[in-house]
Length: 232
Image (spheres, helix red, strand yellow):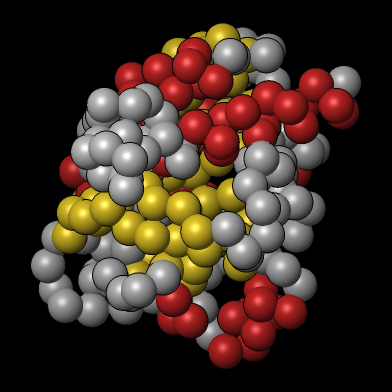
C-alpha cells in the first residue's frame, strides 16, 4: 500500500511519518505541497510542523496550498487522510473536519507523553485499537486547544466523531477533553498528539516494561493498511 506524506514549507515531522508508514509495512511516497499530483497513493498523511511559520493561523496558509485541492477531492471521495498536529489544523482550515484549534489555554508550548482514550475504533485509522483502549503517544503543540460551538460539539459527540480524548490531564484546554475527531464517513481523522513518534521500541514513550518502549502509534498506520486491503 502506498501512503503519501505531504511536505509543506515548515513541515518537520514528514520524515518521521514516512518512517512510520514503512515500519507498518506500507510504502511511503513523498509528496510536495506545490504539486497537483497525488502520485496514485492509497492514503495520505498531513504531518506535523510549523507550515508557513504558523503565520495568519496555524494551518491556514497550508490549507490553501496547490495540492490541497486534490487532497480535498480525495478525502471527499473516501480516501483515508490523517492530519497530525499541524496537519489537524490544516484539516480544520480546509473544512475536512469540524471545529478549530486555538492557542493553548495556559499560553505555553507543551511537550509531554500524553495518555489518550480511543473513543471510536471504527475509523480507517483506528481499526487496530479497541474501543475504550488507553494509549500513550507524544504531544507537542502551542495551539492545540480544540474548539467548536455547542451544537457542533453535541453532534460530534452524538455521532461518534470524537475519536480520541485526553486522559489524566487536558494539556491545552480542548473542549470536552477532545484530542482528535473524524469526518462523518470516518476516512478523515485529525489529532493533536503525534503517533509517528511512538512506533519503535527504544524511541517512544516510557512504559512499565522499559523506558522509551512505547509503540502505540504504530497501530494508526497498520490500521489504515488493513482497512485499505479489505476495501480493495
